[in-house]
Length: 130
Ligand SMILES: [Zn+2]
Image (cartoon, rainbow, N blue to C red):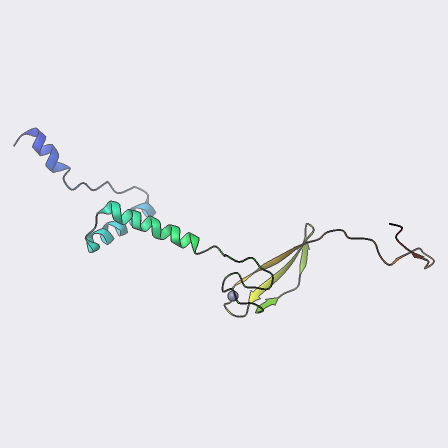
């Protein structure tokens, strides 16, 4: 056997080394196991895991952003509102969905409109000239 052949056979498994980080190492082992069980290459299994992970992130966003509609289950009119509070000129209404149990807050901008019901100390009414 020549040195060259010996070198080739030593690397024949073609498996990349497992990472040192514990979490990454466990993940790599799960991917290897999955590849072995499904008769696919580790590279393909890795891509499948990455795609599944991306899909999971995508599923955690909500599509509809509408007042009174639960962003998680999209049922209308089942939000139970708590007491509002004002935070930096934004009115926040905490809600809980009676349908799916999700929770969140509806935000409303506060904007100056006008002065009204203006009276001086003697009770004389003042109208807006504009
Ligand atoms: Zn809901």
